[in-house]
Length: 294
Image 1 (cartoon, rainbow, N blue to C red):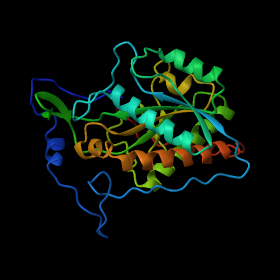
Image 2: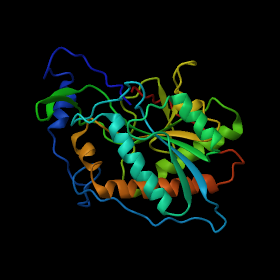
Image 3: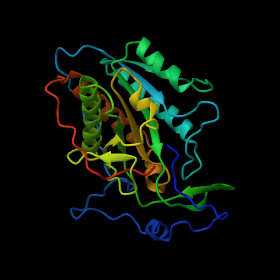
Image 4: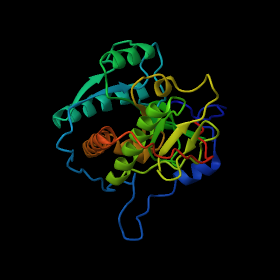
């Protein structure tokens, strides 16, 4: 999503001195000598999918975020539009989910199609989807301009990498449980694969963090301003902010085949875990006051 806080005083103007200083610090390994995400070479796991014997094939509606009537989303550290990124990842994820034999997948739109957001939700509901997953990349904090592509100025901020999974709790209890179960299962499997959960440090009053489930955030916008893709679907719905698009190392990792392979495996297992789980009794939906500024 495109919610970078910037004070645009001109090209190459420093917008956040602390973040700019952090951007110059090289990645360092963990004490054990293992690099941590998103450092180049930091390992990612690809776990084989495990599903209960009675797990029936599920219908997954994949929404490639943005891409409607000029809404291209954020522009990454290398000037890639979010809408292009999400469509590329959604197509790859759909292919890999279908290949497991456990899912049927429908994409909200293809390249060049102009599909309204409400129409995407209606399509998912008419198709009787078991889950609605909207893919996005995030853009956080104060950033600096740099030449991220030949002859093009892009925003860069290397201080806050990581993924987040967003959900909304303004619904009845059965659906609330299904939403939070899906969000937690996806975040848990992404973290286990080696992706870094975002800690919400730049988030202010718009989302609240889940204290027991890193990377999970519940929508805390003012009523009437909450995210449509989270609150409107009548099927369990989440947004996955795959990474911080202004972080150079993290954006580079999301161009790697291994990243897409690991992400797809984590999402597949998260979907199985959530959709095979009983919906009662309801798990606690406690959240902290840590908020998200996006």
